[in-house]
Image (cartoon, rainbow, N blue to C red; front, side, top):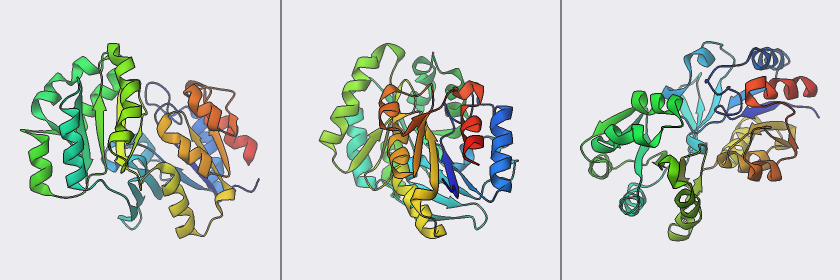
Length: 277
């Protein structure tokens, strides 16, 4: 396979559970870039949430952010594709989430936003995800009322996210099925044990990958993609070779072309990249 582009999720995929980059992955990324391969982080995060140690490597120009709501060109400092949630739709979803035992936030532009009392209560929802709690606390701006903030700013959102307490796994699974039925205009996925991520149905990492390939003149058959979560499935299916992590959700493994021999903690991405070069 002649690989011209490799896209990869970050959390649970390229990064280990402590959000560090395994040395084997770093070596593989550098080797791939030296061979002329385009390297594309494809994440649910936004630019501000990118780990500094990754950005300092200087290996990436293009990014897929917020589950495909943004395809970003770092060199030109602009989005080359966008698929946001309209404010009116976001408000309807927020009103529904108010009926559930959850807290929620949104990404818009360079920041995340969260109703202040939910921001203060967020530690209750991340007892099993301390590293994610740090990201939430650092990257969300508490506002008096998120719905009112969405009304006033009146701009599309990259995504909405809701969070469940650790004991609410069954309710989370039920809502993953219920949300698309109530709101057919959305894409509902998940990347963590306790979250649901809500994007426009026009987003998705897979669509974003295809849009980037079109801009770069790359045949999707000449791409590889790595992921571990439900929000990675469409990207794995869009790529020429979609590879699930050993530690991936079983539903992701079912849709992938292959599964890594090693987990995210053991440099699984890097070992597979070296096989393809």
